[in-house]
Image (cartoon, rainbow, N blue to C red; front, top):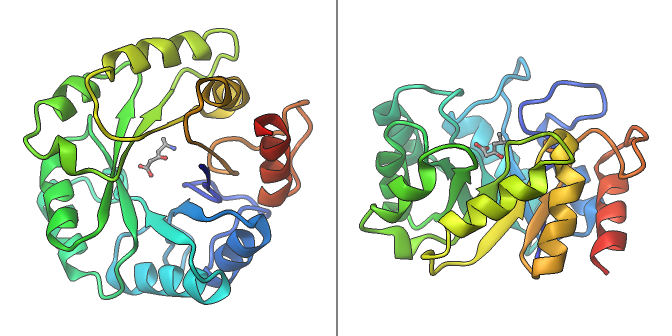
Length: 230
Ligand SMILES: C[C@H](N)CC(=O)CC(=O)O
């Protein structure tokens, strides 16, 4: 499975931010799964119910059948109790949401998502104690998937960091989506392809095509990823 990550927290003219732009990016990609970061009226990332509802509904209207995921990252709302309360206030539910397991209160946020029937993507960053913390959580077997997130951005060493992270995840019994970021995005995507793991691509993870040229949009990244995965 190839997931689209069209925006993350980036702000650049070609990075989609509004619901119509996110919806157009998802539709153009032709992919069946998306992880997006809803934005407020000023373009800042948000977990507030109205912008989450607008982003999710816009994507569903433009690309029916696509599994729509959102972020719950702590840099958006540092208080985990507040993040869990925001999840409980959502009026339109995404299909899934990522939870970064090294962040304090990840279990509270994930339990709010489970309570609401939203699939949990457990984000386990390399170089953190996230894998051990996640495996100690009593509901680890209830997540939709694990996002194995390689934070090493050096193309030479990111695949090794991915290997260490995957070794830590050996006891995980749920599907794994492996991805990197910045200079690590393409080497880690190639590794995911070799291992037969799900992966993701989009302007959240890299602004560059595999040859180092700037990507004009998400679709160019997706086309390049498809070529590598085929
Ligand atoms: C640093 C990663 N790009 C974060 C990520 O993809 C998951 C999240 O939305 O929190």
